[in-house]
Image 1: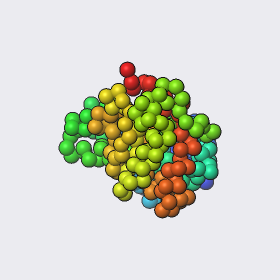
Image 2 (image 1 turned 120 degrees about the horizontal axis):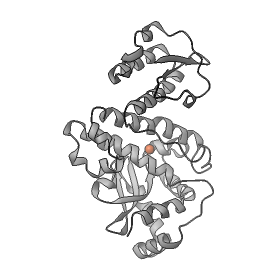
Image 3 (image 1 turned 90 degrees about the horizontal axis):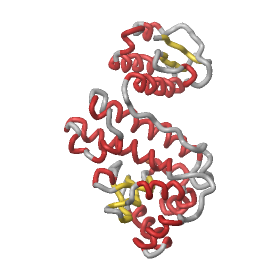
Image 4 (image 1 turned 135 degrees about the vertical axis):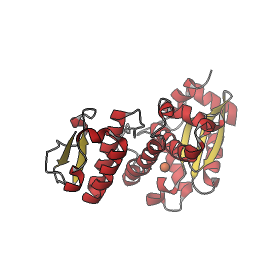
Length: 285
Ligand SMILES: [Fe+2]
């Protein structure tokens, strides 16, 4: 185990045999280790609780900028030791969805909010070896099997982790304005027309009280529109989501403030219908 500080000296990275150095931004440069951190070295660092402790120490030793990479390093180390969940990379840049979703909101949403759900999910599952073998989908489908002491944490943070994964996946730049093929046929069957689908989806997203999500789901092989509160996920109720809209204020407040209707209307311009169709076809018979 080796400690590195990079460039400015404000960033702490932790390197072990399971973590590839090139995964860190820039080339890590070996520097002297703050004395409070240097007490934890070598084999001790393979112990998760000690890794936690060193990051707590690092938090006190470095600036805010350093904390971000500390968390990244933490995730990488956890991944190296266990099958933990990782923040997915986006398939597009933070500014790709401008002017509909602004770059600043996208960046904060992904690197802060989604990262926080990911970290808290990993923390909740830290000592749950059997659950860590499961996919997040399987975990959310069977919340009753989660030990009671961590069930709420898994429901909230596992939901936050999965919901945002899907949210990023079903958006993109320069997208078609509506679906085609089998998905369009199914939407027409279920809601009479795409326009009526859009109207109903918008209405549900608008009237979701407080924080939550609007969804297009496959339930018993048919399409339905539903909404959920907080980070609750339709998977837990036996439905499979194919499209989702985050209506937490953190998703839109910087650009739209209290104008949720405008946010929803603009969001329809960035839906990746091709991807939604793929997910639809994978979850219908
Ligand atoms: Fe969100």
